[in-house]
Amino acid sequence: MHADVLRAPPRVFARAVRGRTIKGLGRRGKNVLMLLDEGCVLAVNLGMTGGLLPFAVPPRGAARPTHPAVRFRFDDGGTLIFNDQRRFGTVEALDASEWAVRDARMGPEPFERGFTVARLTHDLARSRSPLRSWLLDQRRIAGIGNIYAVEALHRAGVHPLRPANEVDADEALRLHGAIRAVLRAAIRHGGTTIRDYRNADGGEGEYSPRLRVYGREGEPCPHCGAPVERVVLSNRSAYFCPVCQPARGSR
DNA sequence: AGTGTATCCTGCAGGC
DNA sequence: TGCCTGCAGGATACAC
Image 1 (cartoon, helix red, strand yellow):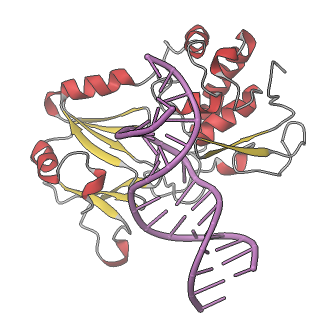
Image 2 (image 1 turned 90 degrees about the vertical axis):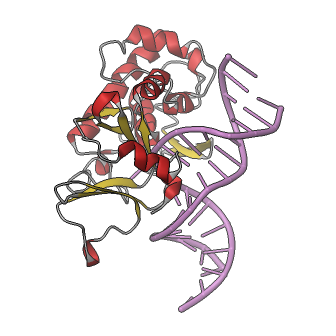
């Protein structure tokens, strides 16, 4: 339907998934995983506007998704449509070894036991990237996007432009806690709907009113009242409180 | 090798 | 009303 979300030629992709059975579901970073037999993985990255929409029967009329990109049909008559307005999402069929390579390239899951303060401190020291960019890099930590990177930095009291290798031990400790806290809170509230995001049941996430700085340029910092500022790096907005997140040093 | 920028695509809000 | 610009939750090819 829209072949550009497939990384492979459509016929190659179809051959890889036709007739297969979904044995389980998973997630790695921001990727939804459908586990097929023989270790094959159908990996879906939702991008900015992607969504997986299940239907018991093929949707007709107004029920039809607005931007269908890939359609799967099941033997029981069910249909799964990957809908993606901007088509920044991707749908890929990977064999076991291809998935292993992909998995190994991704950083730790924020909630796994191996993601410790010591590991974060060690990894930060190896990079001069601005922290906001560092947090978005899926090779460092898997699963953090712009909203939660920005929110975690505010909770930790660290400036988004701070070079990763200049973060001190106390800041790393706070950042580690802040990453987990913001993700935990956002998950508990069903995610953040700004415009398009919907959960698997079609409902909106309830976390957006709880965002402390993201999208709040000029509004008062909920901690100190100073106006929230916006800075653009790598073409993406970061929001921060100039008082709670000083450009240099600890708070 | 590591890092920052431009780009893919569509739609919407706001200014004039 | 309509045209223009900027912006949007992601990831990466490419230049330096």
